[in-house]
Length: 281
Image 1 (cartoon, rainbow, N blue to C red):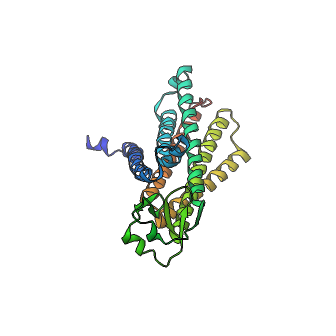
Image 2: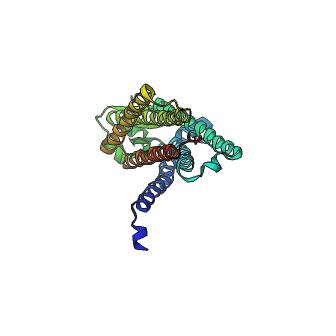
Image 3: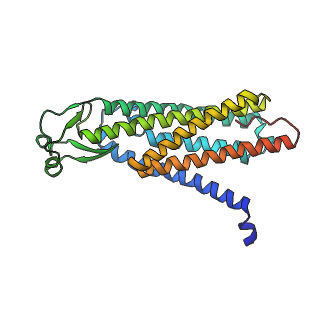
């Protein structure tokens, strides 16, 4: 029994699904962050677009977890005979289409949030004049505290800005770092979309027997560049950002390594059987 549990394949599978579960848990952690920020950023008059901007990371993570589950089902779990069924194909493609729309909306949400941080002007009055009047102090990306007599005193003499669309005061250094991190969210989201497009193209070309030579080398080069960008983003978050962002980025890189290995194993098994792989994506 112990020997079976310690078999390398079983340990690999357990580790893989532990990573997937950790990503699922991150959905809740991101929701807590977004909910805390929504108290400041949302009001009764906020529309759907504003809601998407504020909860962009939660919505984005949910869609990506669903997309990851689809990739895992198609490349590792479901047998080829099941994947050939038209009803299964339509279901998988339908869910993928919904996820794609949500992810694109989330990208727009990240972009809107970044533009919101860009829309700032120098604060003419002192911060203490706004204390205890419903204003907030920006302490980091989507991190706020109520502006009061204590924290406004610490801001005296420093360069301050106010976000034009919000009752938020921001020290120059904090605002600059928040802009960098908000832009990184946009770049990271766009890079992951590119990863999925490259994986989809790779699988479809392989199905048609057209993946080889220059296309194979070009695809490998493009994916290497995109993964390098994602790794740099994770490292940057590790040094100057939120630990949750770093941890989430690291887990996603691991998760898509598993998907890449699934696809490689699937193609290898198909070649050993002497047939063209079935469409799995």
